[in-house]
Length: 210
Image (tube, rainbow, N blue to C red; front, side, top):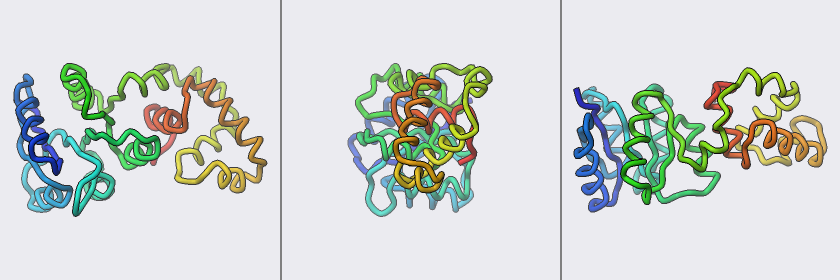
């Protein structure tokens, strides 16, 4: 039985091309194309069969990607969603993942890697591109966690919120310099290079329930 896929993208030509591509993949079939999140939400509210996977754009009119993810997180938290967008800034990536997005891809991705990403999300639940995977590739969480201090774990929790590092310092009653030390220490211990990497690592290894 084919995996059903819903496409949510306001660019008609791209969405149609994406539909043709997905339908060409073995074991996949597009069950609907929607111009914005509101149209997808209407489908869910109509109690129609839910797609196995949603391919979601970020920038759309009426109801954009983050708004759609927020609704899905509250109403259908187990829905698998793969972001497919041109937005590659750290803040957007982090925010979407925190809302429950299972993977984040750019639209210029190679079709073979795109197919692999879909397979991984459907089968394993998550997929990260090579750039992100490099930051969280070490899955031996037992060894990693034993190297983390209580304060580092506390900092990691705050780093996965929307607080700035300065606000984290105030929250933990520490100096910004000490916070910088925790950040650099975690970068080294977890083999990540950015705040996005910290968030993705925490979610990947279920350290935090966001």
